[in-house]
Image (cartoon, rainbow over all chains, first blue to last red):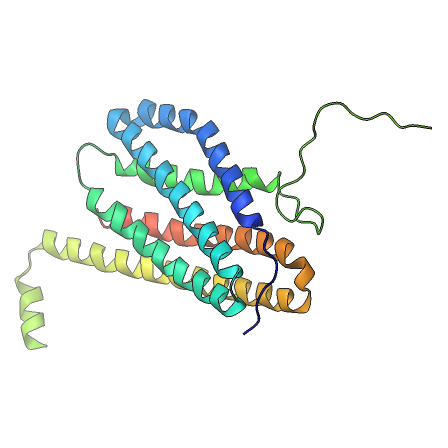
Amino acid sequence: MTVVTDTAQPEVEVVWDMVRRAALASPVLLVLGFAIWGTPGLVGAAYGLLLIVVNFVGSASSIAWAARRSQVLLMVAVMGGYLFRLAFLFATVWPVRQVGWISIHSLCATMLATHLGLLVWEIRFVSVSLAHPGLKPRRTGKIQSRRT
Amino acid sequence: MEAISRLVAELDAADQKAAQAAIGAGFAYGLAAIGPGVGIGYVVGKAIEAMARQPEAAGMVRTTMFLGIAFTEALALIGFVVFILLGL
């Protein structure tokens, strides 16, 4: 069993940035859900947003946890995590599919839009280089003038 | 077998339609989950191979792997949404 010695957690860094962006985008999604489907749409959009964020955080946490231990465990965590997350989505969405206070169409649309939208949005801010394996470094303050 | 066919024959048209929708939804979800499962397995396998060859690039590989998994999982999510909407 190969032990991975890298202790950085780039996926956790990326996913917390995605959560921050989900919080920024949430008013738009909630207003859209409310405008199209009314109050059930608002609840559905909020629920869908929450499910996707939990899904992302769970995925990144399990990968980071397993990657610190071994590569075999990483494979197990990713494949097991995939099945677990599918079961989690089923268990959380199936009971509310026919209740009156939640719009299932709003929930489904928000889940798809949030998942794909956050991923595409985040791609712009991911560095994927040896120096910065997670997010791109942020520019801080003034641009330093070149000294001659 | 005979009992099942008798049971099916006793169902009225609405029940048969609901049963067929449920069967279709189950197939849609199952088939939609297989593809991403294979894809995620392939992504993780290749990522582990890359990390084993170049341990210093593990962080970079893990970031790419995470994003690849998330994009692949979107296919399963689409299947899930279709399953939920068909099974209504």
